[in-house]
Image 1 (spheres, one colour):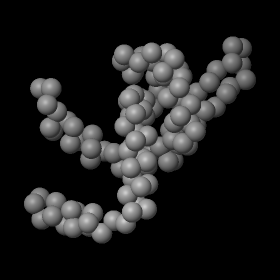
Image 2 (image 1 turned 180 degrees about the vertical axis):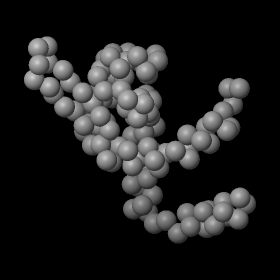
Image 3 (image 1 turned 90 degrees about the vertical axis):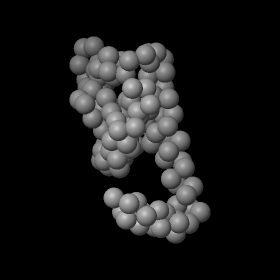
Image 4 (image 1 turned 120 degrees about the horizontal axis):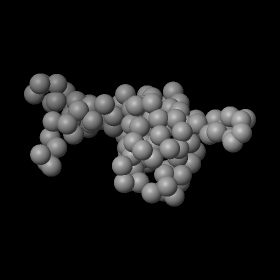
Length: 118
């Protein structure tokens, strides 16, 4: 494990400024309060606003609506309007969103291992 960690750190030393900027932008988006929880809720099957509201404990409806719009704007979630009565709106992960969650999986596992609240 130590060798793999050292190789990864050596690879990270070769990152250029543009890659660092793009990484920082992505981390800031996912690091916004509730954004990661919303993406994880999508991965767990949430589609409707009420699904997200139920799965993301503690979020206000106003902030949930704002974050859903932001994640849609960044093409991590796709918003679909179903022509029904009443109109239904669904939010699902895009390919970009699924790929992001795959990339975040090691961080999720790290949090499970090193959670300081236990």
